[in-house]
Image (cartoon, rainbow, N blue to C red):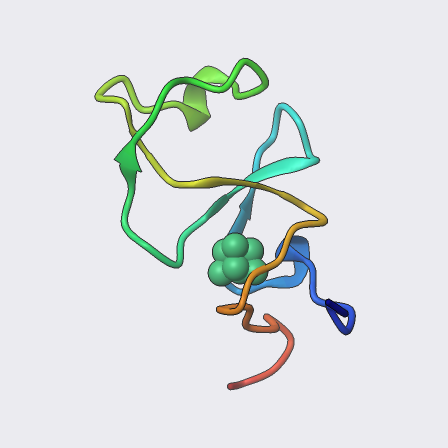
Length: 71
Ligand code: SF4
């Protein structure tokens, strides 16, 4: 499947992780129970274990929304 240049790092719902720029959070859906990822810094990790889904910069999904466009 062709992604037509779509990447999570360019999506409106993506939040970069300061400790490892290749991994970030997807804010399209609500946080879910999840284990701590070893590459995440403490600021990025919620002790309640409710976290945003983790994605890589090069990932993408069908909900992609270009942050450079209005809609
Ligand atoms: S492309 Fe999909 S998975 Fe990636 S940040 Fe956007 S909504 Fe989330």
